[in-house]
Picture 1 (cartoon, rainbow, N blue to C red):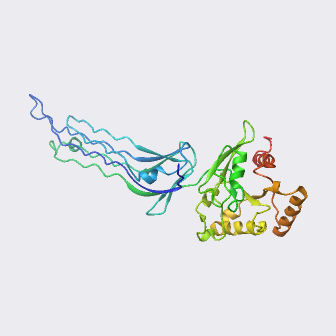
Picture 2: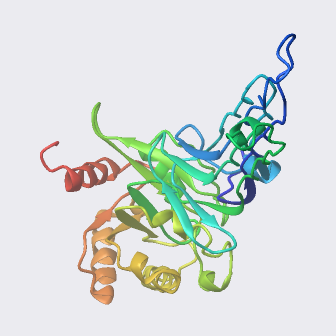
Picture 3: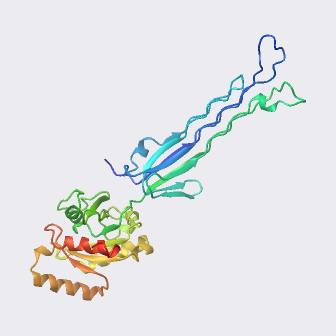
Length: 337
């Protein structure tokens, strides 16, 4: 299924039913009086977060969501039937904006959470409502009101505990494949990952966390180079970033430059995201001897003046990945492991 994280839709509540003008007509009752019933309320449009949905692709094909109108009233004081609310399912993690005002209407982060986005139209009154001691035969009714109409922008931000950062071909997809059941595409050319992937890392039967892999960044991504920074928003909800770097790039490039490039693009996109806690992950260490790995690691750290946690792993050979996952879990729940 194609991954879509933004969509524009139109929502409209159902119109209220009109009131009825009617007079009682029965044998031997010449002055029956008014008996026109009220109309029924229209349906409202409600968004509901559903954890079984992970993309906004359906909203690319169905852009209008209009609730049904209420029925008009009838004679014999019969009230028109009200319409059911229209419930539209959206992925958990969806932000809902009003296009005209740019107001954030809601941030739907819990399964089953509901948000009213278009109120129903209210019912009209039948002529029986206008009966009085001085107006025994009212010929007055009211129309049902129109439902609320809005243009909405839906924006999906994935819910994950850990986010992966790095240049294309740094090994992010290989890493998420090695620690979870997720199977993103892996190949020896850049930008094999074209959309975010989520994987559940299960440390034991009762402990797990969710990890998000986004397409790799390159220099100038904040200005639209490569795939740009359109997917960086999916890391804003994460609690920890893993910055994955190839310790021995095949093209001979400098890992320190790669780290600085990613950080600069991150800072351009969001200073808050750039300040989020990052762990440095030096990947593909199986290509070097143990003493070479340590030598390159110390060289990188000294030039970066890195103060945070550092791990040397091989995602392909699954070396060091288990300890890394245990440490991530232990950081949030020290007594669990």
